[in-house]
Image (cartoon, rainbow, N blue to C red; front, top):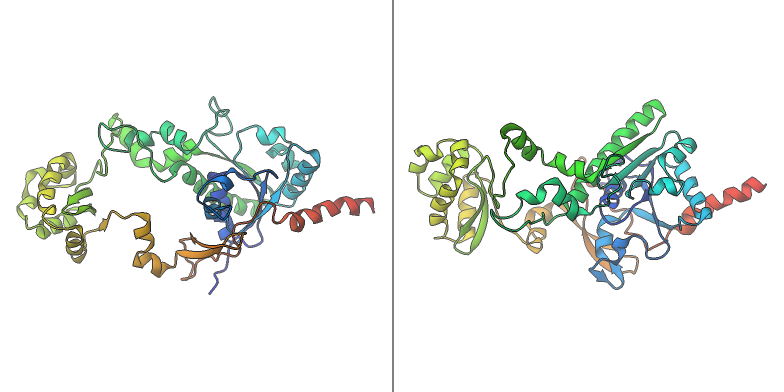
Length: 389
């Protein structure tokens, strides 16, 4: 069963490279939007050159650009800029992730296009925002993770700065952008007027860190690196066992009681050092040492089965090959086949969302560079012929 796609009929023009913008565009495309990706004729989106490369085609690019069409325009050519303006004039949404000022210099800024299309939702993703003392600075996921404080709390205590292994700054900005665009579309339907959405990667990263910023506001102290541990909960971390590590999250007193019973230490439940969540968090280093003395006597599978049986949230420390082969991932059908433009069939992680038990479909594979030039640009060029009569 194919779900009803809420954004069917919504036309999006994407002027984006690498991750944050293309991820946003893909989220919109998954929900039915008609996304046309504008790329430079030479090389296109720089993500196309990122490995792994399968028979000349980037699987990284494929992972963020399904359900889109690709059109090549040289935006230093006035004729191609005019085609871009015509695309925007007929679009509902324009999405871009250039440095502030770039689109204005090209004649494709919000002020230019609003005059052509008052209903246009114009979404700009940038490192620091469209205005302010840092607005002129560029940024990538690494630099925003450093700037935002994420790297200050990631890693082991006393260790070197470590970034989150997932591009959190890129994808948080992409999520905020998609959410904001859909919200703005509702307003445009009601009022007939579009808007300019400013999505800074720094702001999105700080918003995702609500627990950390509130800790600073409440205590006056900077959050610190805790490895896999939690500043306000324990036991809530990765624990060493006989054959490696496993994750355990006993986030309340009832779950903590189950942990004590499972490890055969009911005395710990009444121990004043661990009597409530705050006490356990304060004394979590000592608690970890006590629990690991028992955990190292058995393999991880033993403890996972025991804790699952009594309802304590726990998990193995998976590699991606392990989690993608997990029975739950298979049941949810999240890994789907996808065809690359070169004819090679590969796999991708599809939309994780379901509506009435059905996920948004992969309607088209990632596009070859300029694959849809004739389909998209020919009608725009014909406008000149029609004007001539």
